[in-house]
Length: 69
Image (cartoon, rainbow, N blue to C red; front, top):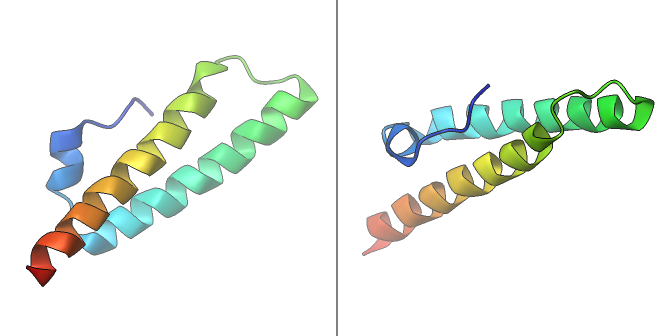
């Protein structure tokens, strides 16, 4: 999975964002196990997944803040 673009994230509904975060967390969990067992080939994917999660959470917080105004 490639890095998510901010425009794609902004187009998501809140439910889609939650699903994406859950999927990324599962992927990150699996990547950590692969790293621990020495099977991880693309080590930068760990960082990308972590940043994708943060990116989605940031956009979700911005959307929630806009609704309360």
